[in-house]
Length: 121
Image (cartoon, rainbow, N blue to C red):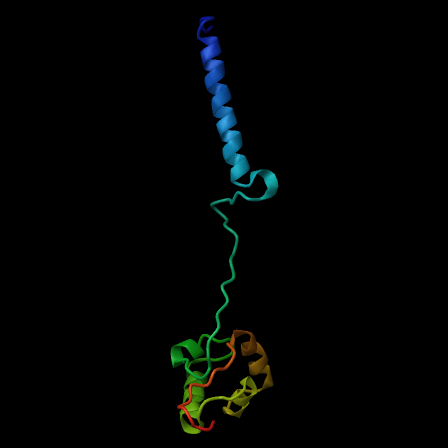
């Protein structure tokens, strides 16, 4: 069907295209799972952490088991009694018990106290 002198040119072009496709696939992860199906990308968990001594109500209400009202109580307690010295100190806030503390503990950053020089906690 094709003229005899065109066949080597077409074969060379096809070979170059197949080699280029193989190189691209190998660099993209090949059959080892490196390629991502664009219709169903993998879920990526983004860790959410906060400092309970500086977080605002909007941030606190994102914690599991903490809504806007409980977030407001945390802030009110923090303003009335000073910063939380340990994560367990949040148990003094009305409405927060051991179960709530266990749920929010993975989202709490290590506590840092920003006290004035020479001030006692």
